[in-house]
Each structure stands twice: as structure tokens, then as C-alpha cells.
Image (tube, rainbow, N blue to C red):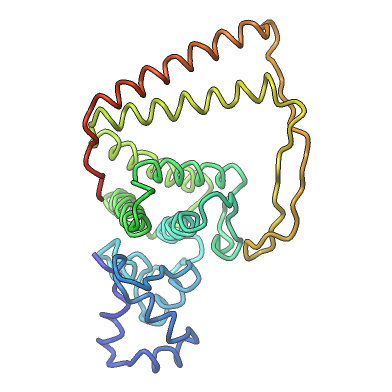
Length: 285
């Protein structure tokens, strides 16, 4: 389901120009917001714009986004469960379009109760979700946006069943909402059920483990690059720091090398198995 911005605008007999004058949002932005995710030029609003438009139309943010059929506006919009879900949705969309930044602008968080550990969990969800998508295809962003929208619809539905979308959220609620996103992704993983997908995920996990082993063993003289960003996510400074590897106590370098060899052999065997099979069809959301 598409968002309801265009539908509500037309119900008030407003042109894009008139809506722009009343909300202060540019005509070009409103036009991009009204497109479907698979249309050229589509852009998802940031959370402050969702809230602004929901306030103008006197509806709830999830209703405007198309996640929910519950139209009633939520009074405690700054800290409600519903708005936390909407904010996480906006964060995931933003990070999906800026993959690798590792940075969530404060303006997107909208002053909600996100800690540093929450940021990391949200980024984990992002990369977990990206692994479900064919990132090499031209319509990757379209498929990614649809996946995140589908996940958000499931999370909203879960809280609507309990009648908790209007509830004022606390830190535990934020963690619970993040966990619901994890569960929704796990359901997608379970439903994929393709041998190729399992092989690819296993290779990815083994490769990550090998990369950490190599850092511990050989990269003591390497450099780690960190970026300093302004509030808009623009890089203002690049810092190069020594990359320190550290072997755990009671584990020798020789043992680590043996582990690395076993992992490398497993990856090669999986790759050989992958080549013997016909390529699975691209996963579409």
C-alpha cells in the first residue's frame, strides 16, 4: 500500500502548491513524497515531515504512511509507541540510502529515547535486511523500501493487536519495538527457505569471522579509518588510527592459524557447492 499523502490532499481539494503554502514543505518534495516507491523520483519523508503532514491532515503518522488503517491522531505524538515505530522506519530508510555511513542524524531521531546501543541495534537490522535483497540490481532501493515498509506494517500490527500504539513509550518499549523488527526479519529469513540463500549467509558469517581473525593476527600495524560528520551526515574530517589486534589469553598464534585454515576450507567447499547449482531466482519483496 502506498502512503496516503496524495489521497488526503485531494480529499481537501488542495493542489501541491496550496499544500506547500500551508505546510512550508516545497512542491518538489511533496511531489516526490506522493509517488509510489517503484516510481522514478520517489522520496520517503523524514520523520519530522511525516509528523508535520500528519498534524496538518489530523491523522496518525502510521495511517499517513500506509502502515495502519487506524486514522485517529495520537495525542502524545513525541513519545508514543506508534511514533517510535515510525521513527525507526525512517531511520532504516535513511540508512538504506546511505549504506555504510554508520550515522543516524539527530533530526531523524526526532528527540526520541534512542541510546548508542539502540543505534547499533538499528544498524544491525539495516544490514540484516540488506542481506535479504539483491544489492546488484538497478531496482535495489525500490525492493529495499518495500521490505522495510513490510516489516514496519508487521510491527505496527503487532502493537495494534494489543491496543498499545497510543501508549507513551519508555526505554523498554523502544527495545521491544527493535526486537519486533528482528522477529519480522527472522520470519522473512525462515520463509525464504532456499539452499543458495543459506549457503550465502553461511559464507558471509564465516568471512566475517575470518576477517576478525586476520585483524587479531596480522593487522597490528594497520590503520582504521574513522569519519567525523556534521549533523547532516557530511564528512568533515578523516581520522586514521592504528588498528590493534589482540589474541585472547591461552590461545596461541598457531591455534588461530589452524582455525583460520578450517574456516577458509569451509568457505571454499561452500563456494564449490554453490557453483554446482543453478542460480536461484532473485528474491523480490
